[in-house]
Length: 366
Ligand SMILES: NC(=O)c1ccc[n+]([C@@H]2O[C@H](COP(=O)([O-])OP(=O)(O)OC[C@H]3O[C@@H](n4cnc5c(N)ncnc54)[C@H](O)[C@@H]3O)[C@@H](O)[C@H]2O)c1
Ligand SMILES: [Zn+2]
Ligand SMILES: [Zn+2]
Image (cartoon, rainbow, N blue to C red; front, side, top):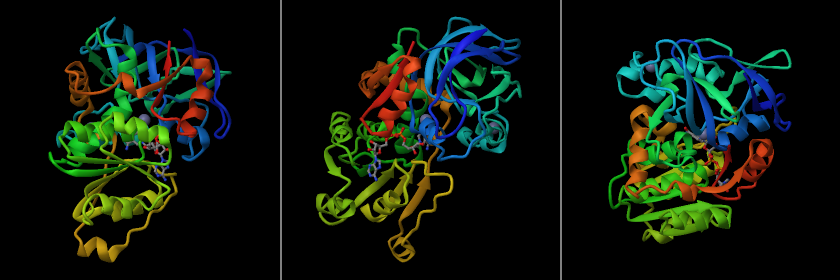
């Protein structure tokens, strides 16, 4: 079939929204008609060339839609199901999967992070070339073909704008607090970067019952949104972050710091902002070649901890339905994350707004 899709032909150049060919779902695959897709900074990184990547590729990895066709042998998903895309479809049988850490599934290294589908099929073609699906998802497109484990069924009465960001920003941010950090009630946390992921760290901390939630960002709009999502304090990153955190915590430092930016400077701020015995959780993704530094002596003497966290650190197949339930109970803000909506042809405007940190998430809607 012919679909419209946003193709990155060359890193550092605008995406081209054009009519391309999409095949039919093979065994174990489903065809999903997109209804809403969040624009994540992990789409901006390859678009701008922060992460070297083979092109052409269709970007987009966070979104929701309706199943229109199922391939042979699909058992968990039916036509007309409403689904949230999961860009980390786990194999279920590798050591990481058996250990309950399906975001570390071995199959992701072999296929997903190489922009391939587990089946090996190539379904996208444009200008007589095969086009890769970013993270095996490629949802800046009218329709996608994903493995059935990449489509998580959700209740049909949840609006698509609410579902748009669950499959990356929300899962990553909330999971960093609950699953990676195991942050206890009453804790004091610092959240560096109050964008799509950071706002969800803030609301994850609020749900976990944290007493003090300090948001740090360079922009006033992200900080205002962070307060709406549960931050008790807001610090402009232009001021000395660690000193400001100490001022707010009686000189002690925070119990946890979340670096959702992932730059060498923000990692340093996060490490300096936590108290003795405190924990830093790093979710922000740097350029592929970045190195951060650690002040090693105080890191040891103060028994600090540093944890990397990808995609919520848990099991997306069960975590995503739990997040939907939290939304239905009125405990998770989802629609409030959507600051701007775009039609697919305006995808480059959406990426530009993300780059200028306009606050909240931009969402492509169909
Ligand atoms: N670990 C994961 O699984 C995972 C998942 C999704 C995104 N990511 C990565 O997380 C990062 C954030 O993604 P996002 O979609 O939330 O981005 P975003 O653009 O929505 O938010 C980033 C925020 O950080 C702020 N910021 C930038 N530099 C700062 C600084 N020096 N100090 C304080 N604030 C600063 C910006 O103003 C913006 O509000 C990206 O690197 C992305 O690739 C990781
Ligand atoms: Zn696995
Ligand atoms: Zn993402």
